[in-house]
Length: 418
Image (cartoon, rainbow, N blue to C red; front, side, top):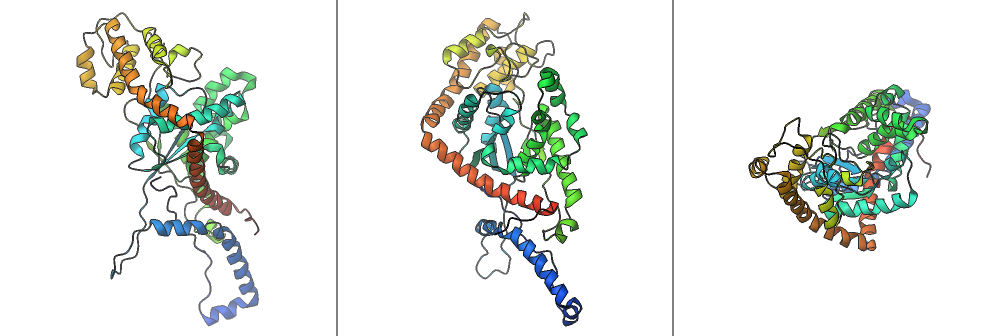
């Protein structure tokens, strides 16, 4: 990882120790005792952060010999994202998220998570979840995520996600959650079987982001409301528990949680169903033909594209609201081939669907072939994949525990006794 452990401000004691003899005399024995108690309380919390100090020191820029300048710690902006391990990852997951992550890992401090806790908000099969967690991690690597540049980890391997979610639950008005569009839509479908977890899903997502002090979060149109909720929760916690109130408890004061910003992905943010150009490609769709999975065979890809929905218009054009399927398939071809929109528009303007589908099929197969080869290599080497996830979890835990301890201290929890 470029910087698996983000530099954090060193913990500072917020208690002022009297410096003059007169102040010492005023404080007396009782004042000294109280000061020792407060320092001890602050010290217990800050002891758990001591490991971060050495890491921050290592990351600091060295001061040139003879220079009076103080060492400066450079911090890359941090990006966090993840995908649920439910079903096979498909072109929508890849083009809308994972492929964009590959470019981000060179410029940012990147954390990419397999969000398995989110996968159980609806009924699931434990054996399939176990398998899908590993295959998702292997797919990240196959798609180009480099474990030496990015932190790849499994959400449930960092227990702070669940713990911070409870703390944030107690600071989040339930009305905020009941307004979430995705909850309303899914609740209507599930009826009486809707779970508390589905309602609380956005708070868990907020914990995922806030634990790692993410500066930027890649979001599509369907996730913007969740990110806005995350921002609102962070601001609310900072208002209630941050600033001088936290400092009086022995913390550093100021904000408790970083408020993240949205990182809007480039083209390909929404890949639509092969059977309905107005619906997003989804793992939960019943029709297998609606999506191209990243591990589909050449024959499966060929059949799905051959059977995909088209229209009866002459020629192929982008951005016609009456032709959503044409726009979707041209966009997929553009992204799979690496050509520009203008090049694709010129190439396909006079094509019929019968001519275009084989061209699209060849482009998809050619693009996915090296990804599938790397996936097979990663998934077959259990020791390697386990080592990547173990290393990622260790780095993620370190950062997450730092944030969690700050929140607990600011909220007034007693630190663990040594």
